[in-house]
Image 1 (cartoon, rainbow, N blue to C red):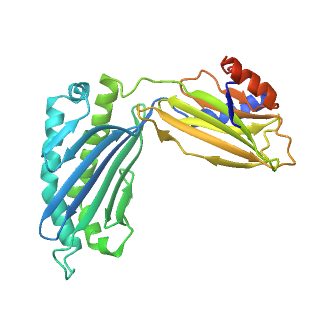
Image 2 (cartoon, helix red, strand yellow):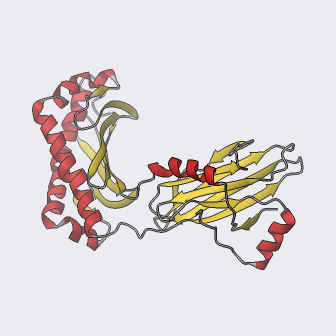
Image 3 (cartoon, rainbow, N blue to C red):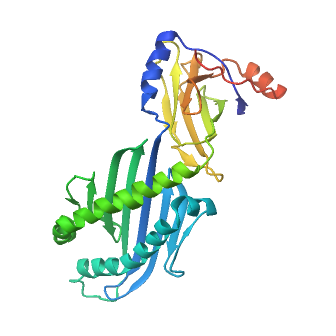
Length: 321
């Protein structure tokens, strides 16, 4: 039987210090913009072209060859970008269709089956912390195989597939280097900054956290700590035992996954062997919308858990002081 509760508890002061240091990597101002392009074509003709744009894993814009229109998710995003930038991005996607066709033709020029369909995948992304750019990436793939990529504005192109050696010389030319840097500044960083500064992609929300315990006939205990409904997606969720923080079990993570309402979900499970009584375990949670880390103890008594669950009284987690 699985029971759910919201718990309260505390850790020792020195453990709190260790946790706070671990949480320094969570930055409320960090955002990532991704633009993904998928092109289907033969060496002679472009058949389909789809593009999507996401900020912090939230979809905000798209392009479909069937409509020849770059569309945004909401009217406020159009207002945030402004008419000029939106129109530029529309023309940019259309103009690049010819370039993508040339790219596929160039890479497949030695194929004997000229009518064979090929799929070109391109990814551009950039990451900011406030107004400081942390990273950028441009990556190309063909028919499910990575071809070539570059990380950082001043990085070097890395060939991942021999077919891309000839393209490397083109990509490294001064002209295309400046074009890539301009695109990063104008359409990746610039568009993201306009959207984030003029509106909000999603209301920032703290996680709802639930701890469950499941007892198996062989004596094994499984604890699960679930955080859901939070935004932004950066979160720290892990199990600790006692004041020494030792873990004596197998820990599994669902990974941070999107909910249907554009919030996020994460579940960490811990399986404890029969020789362990299961006492002293707690889930540590930190998120940008929590002032301090919160601790949700695992249960030490199924009867106590059942009593709390039946009463339908959810006690909020206590913030560490």
